[in-house]
Length: 307
Image 1 (cartoon, rainbow, N blue to C red):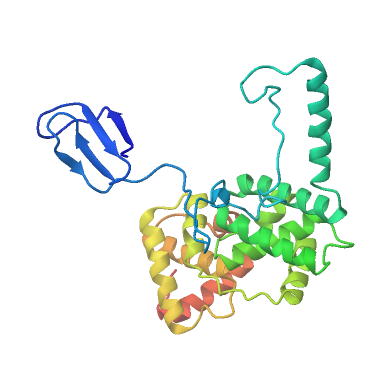
Image 2: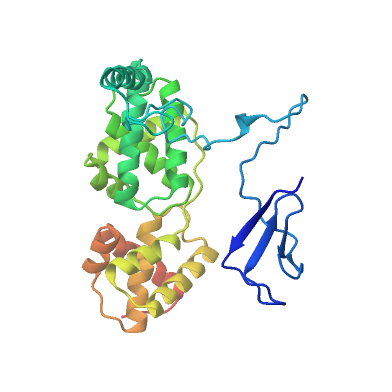
């Protein structure tokens, strides 16, 4: 038996009829008047009831929202909604409303019955807050939640502040995904001292044996240039200088943001754009002394004197 549905708003290219029929079994889109097949590969937007088990049949366990590490229960626990209505939409009676309210309270309490669950719930809430403050992607938050869960399993949270360890996990996730965020950025967002975040980061790096890729300084150029309001010409020149520095091996062992700020300063001098070292320093969060030292190495590499 065919399951057809009417699509309103589409138009037949042959006769101009606006009544287009969708055949869910064959995946065809055809005109109800002349019968021309408009498309034979349409996307099935209905629920997926297929089962890949040996028993076969329809298994509804494959449907529903995907699980996520950013939720303390991974999105698997039940939630009693706040709407006091039954399945048919009728409002509940007074006695039933009080019973549902008690059930709702105990349902929320049962989800965090241990101290580890309460700790994880608070930590993940802090991560979601910092996501909006620092404009982080979902991938970074997923990775930081994974690192925090591993730290919780190794009992690294005991005796340490949740905010400090959350900030360290976020910084580790940014390093792992090559997202240009410094310790100072996360410190300002979390209102935690940079020294405390660095201490927690060294702890999880050592205990969890994390493997961090080398940060590409080119990824920090766009961020510094946008804050300092530099032109696209200067940005392209800075990237050109950094590529030459990478080929000569000058970037190895240097702070990526420091070498990016120095290349932008030299690019400003080359293109004639007036920007002081102090302005570049404020935009990048790198001290002027570091920018001067990196500029000296870049000048030698470029083999020409820039005044």
